[in-house]
Amino acid sequence: MKKIYNKAENRSFESAYIKMSIIDGILHFTYKQIENMDLDLAKTCVADRLRFTGDASYPCLVDVIMLKSSSKEARDYFATAGNQGIIANAILVNSSAFKMMANFYIMVNKPVNTTRMFTDKQSALEWLQQFKD
Image (cartoon, rainbow, N blue to C red; front, side):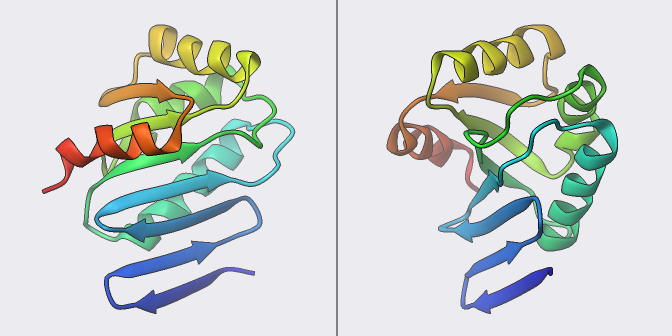
């Protein structure tokens, strides 16, 4: 059930695992409820994103609120090859557990692009503005 909608500059995409929109030059990437993000699923999500964005690169708001856990292999992939086409990541979290998970990802997996964690969506979007072309 993959859909792509074109509406002027703003576009949306949805699959079984993710929802994406490009709004005002920022990629909004939201995970649907996923119990465990493994490497195969991570590669599927990135492939969907790359098909959606094409050759363009975007600053990205990543909403991980519905993601329960992820494997080390998935985190390593997201931090390196999985960051292709991403200028900067703002990871949106809403609990202490997610804060720990996001901090662990940033500190241990060391993403290849600028990545910060936020608990407030508006603050994350304001921070991402500096990375727009």
